[in-house]
Image 1 (cartoon, helix red, strand yellow):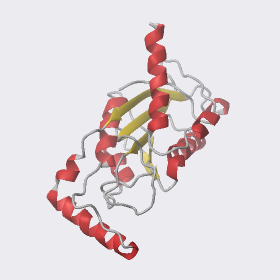
Image 2 (image 1 turned 180 degrees about the horizontal axis):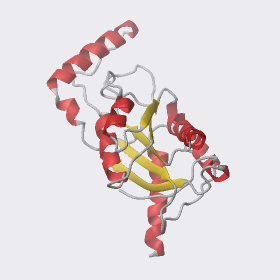
Image 3 (image 1 turned 120 degrees about the vertical axis):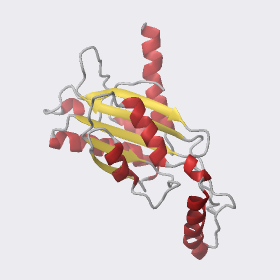
Image 4 (image 1 turned 90 degrees about the vertical axis):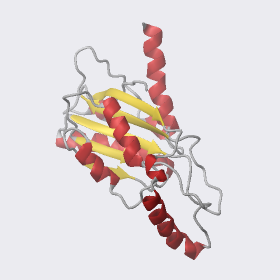
Length: 224
């Protein structure tokens, strides 16, 4: 896990949040399949769902369906990045690869388990632009509603439970990044990031956001 501080696109010019930025960040890797993948009941239901979904295209699910539950990944990230006693007003979940639990309203569920019971929604079906779009939406919501704290969760898995039949760019690893936005507390130093940097992060997976979070860690170690 590592930390990073930055400002969302447009936040520097925001009249309601002149110093608003990322107060805390976390990044976690998930090399092992989700515990949900080992649940035989869920696996059977998911295989049946995928069989019906793929049949019109002449495709079939893998014999053994495995992968990541974004709910499980996100809960770990929330625990890692939200300090004890603090509350979140807005939660935005972003991903491009489908979840292992397609029938679950994951963002709504996270809104109940995250401290503060925040307004929550997900940004999907945007390809590699999902996280960048989610960051811009988060900044716009927070600015217009005067929210004090907002949480961006970017989660991706490195596998599909079926062969799509065409070349598909998948992330190199299953990873997640959490960015906790808010007015900085004493001793915290927000780092301004050019909004163009988020456009450069438009590629599959959480990789660009993982790299972004790691840069600040290296800077802090060097400064000590």
